[in-house]
Image 1 (cartoon, rainbow, N blue to C red):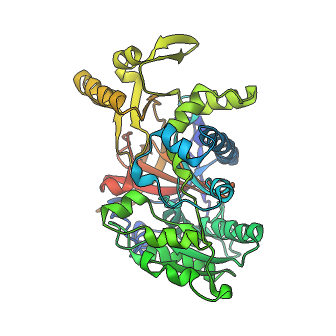
Image 2: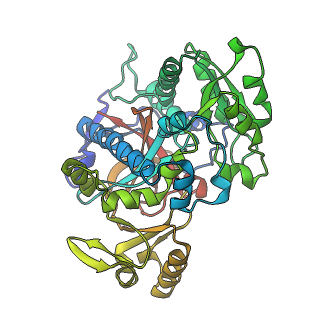
Image 3: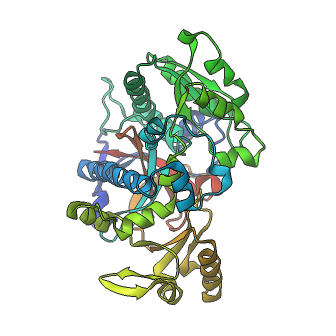
Length: 452
């Protein structure tokens, strides 16, 4: 069967290419397989599902990861140079007191592994990829989901020799390689602790156990630990200790459901390295992106060109002057007077929370949001990027056959230890654009992008 389909011109932005993969099975089969792979993980029910992986040209796929790795390094340097010590950075970012915990005793180790687990979010704008934010945390969404979607597509599209018409790394394989390298760098046995909790709303044990099981079947020794079980990771014979691991949780999520972080601190104090370290929070803050967009004194001309090409104009919001398209402007009056050009974002936030898209609110609402953000001192404004579309094949509840739709995807390249680990993407099945949070309701969907 011919697996490729030429969509011709006029089927979306040229960056996505003009070829896609045909559905490789009946709609009911695809639907059943997709839902089976993500069973018992807490992933929300979706009324609209993909009928095939989203396929893009190899050059586009390579561009995303080449630029992601370069920007992550610039982001890391920007965050670290905001202050010589952790205490200085906490002050510079005006971090909430709840984030002043779970630090490693060795500041070099703390800073060295802050960027081990990263997922930027980007859209394809009129001029190509634009990186909207950087999620820097061991608790990234999209890892289990990408791995599960890939398992379905490989099962459906592989030929009798196991070859597929597309390429994509497996996130679990790449993360396993990251932990092998981590163990080698530290001189430790690669015994991996996957630390999280099924008590967090919307997550079940299998979400964590899938990853631990994968490691155990690929030459590593791994175990999922709830926080109260963590003493078993270090209070034991040396050859049984789990001294490297994944910090698959966020402090706000645990505090929301009343989970004590003390066992994690005890594990860190007793020699466990959990990535990404707490320093990742500085990289995760959108204030860092604002600093990078405005330019740092140490940046080369090539650095500045990369940032200008791939980051939308982003500024930390305050009453001051700044540059805009080569001219100096008073930032606050400019922001108040150009609502439809801008997006307002809190420094810390997840799943699209604390984000105001100017064109989606009236002037009074915009002025109120901007005023509150200025008072808080930890928000950024960013140039709005009009997401471009691509044509995909979808399966909706109640439909017996796949159908075509033009969607505006948000791309999430997974980068583990500087290595490409798969390309997660989210979209609205009806083709609308905006803040796409799969956990925010049943109107959004997800898939994986692959290279052809």
